[in-house]
Length: 392
Image (cartoon, rainbow, N blue to C red; front, side, top):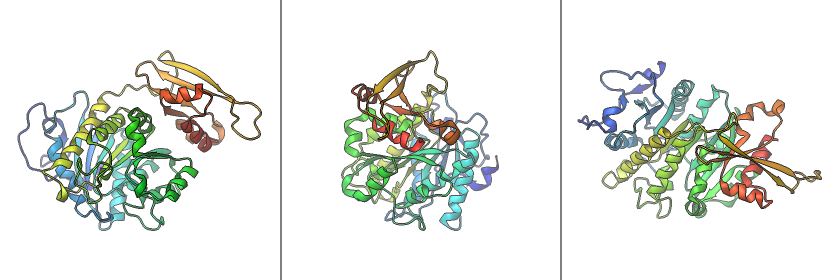
């Protein structure tokens, strides 16, 4: 595969692994050569780009530190994973972005999920650009303690990359979900800006009090970007931007498992881990466990996204008396689908096929049983309304 020239083998301590450990199972780019990617479902890439990090110098060393811990964990049966090494950094961060875009686009075209270990979170922008070749609109979910909008799209760093994504001329972004943000780190204007674009925002308290609601949020993602500073400092100290509050380690692992189980998700990245600030490798070990849960979730994918609705689904029609627009005299109907294999729910959002055909893959919106109950109580679920506004 032509991506080999963009990569170098990981620099980790060579050791003997037990037969059950990932170190014995993962196809690795090493002194013996580049791995054969035939049949590979997930490719791990280390990207030590940190020149656009803010207050977190040292996150460039994360990939190999995380690998050291990941290789010691037990392998998950039923999936083939390759570690294709570390990306050669460009002369400038922009050069690195172009390399990330190319490598990820090749993997995506070959139905291989790029699993990125950063590096700073602005690499999410490069990951997003990889979807241009697919000409596919995407949903992005960011797990972060704050909103990385920044002041202008002219400059890009880990605190402003979202602005570059939202304003990119390709207009690939269909939906953005910001989850686990902490209000005291966020300007109210930023949240209002996202809401006006009908994007989703979920506070940390919401994610922690309604853990089951995190599943449809992540199930709707094509790209998941996880900033390690979203995890509380006591669980993940290896980030200069870590704070006392945040997700617990178990909650971070659960989110990654949800991501792995999603039929839709096609790339994922963990960013901002700074080994120089770690406590006996605690955060690197947590990141390795998060990856393990992603792989375990992937091994349990059920392929139940209702592309063709048949006997494996229950269909529910709920009448909502509330009109969609001020000119409507009548209410409308929301159609729900429930998978009989997994008990997962979706809502159907109407749209004009001729005008919005590129958005067809977004008209079935992952939701929860609570959304169905809300509709039964004659209230419109926020997820449905926001998707309707973007599709019509």
